[in-house]
Image 1 (cartoon, rainbow, N blue to C red):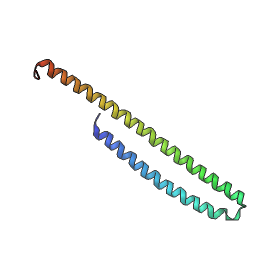
Image 2 (spheres, helix red, strand yellow; image 1 turned 45 degrees about the vertical axis):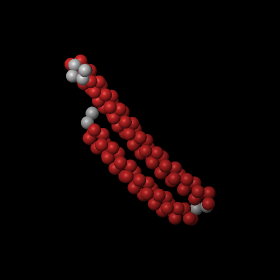
Image 3 (cartoon, rainbow, N blue to C red; image 1 turned 90 degrees about the vertical axis):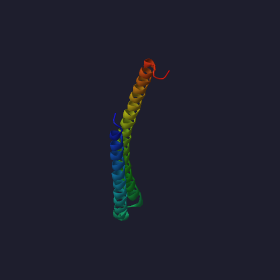
Image 4 (cartoon, rainbow, N blue to C red; image 1 turned 60 degrees about the vertical axis):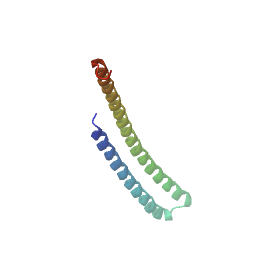
Length: 104
């Protein structure tokens, strides 16, 4: 496997993480807006509304982070597979060199 592919994939994941962080900031802003709206509600109603908004925001963040985690698992698997293939090629090369008598 080409190392540049892993590097590009990692950069893509970093971009996704940055985008998620921006969305989190937007979510926090939305929660702040909601807090201003709940001023007219009773304290329990206001707490419920805020809790529901925070819960929805946290669920969205969790889903995004789980997706990124899954993508990282694929990248790590591909990396490990590339390392194993590289080691196998090195072993084959070493055997060929030793078999030809060059390193005796």
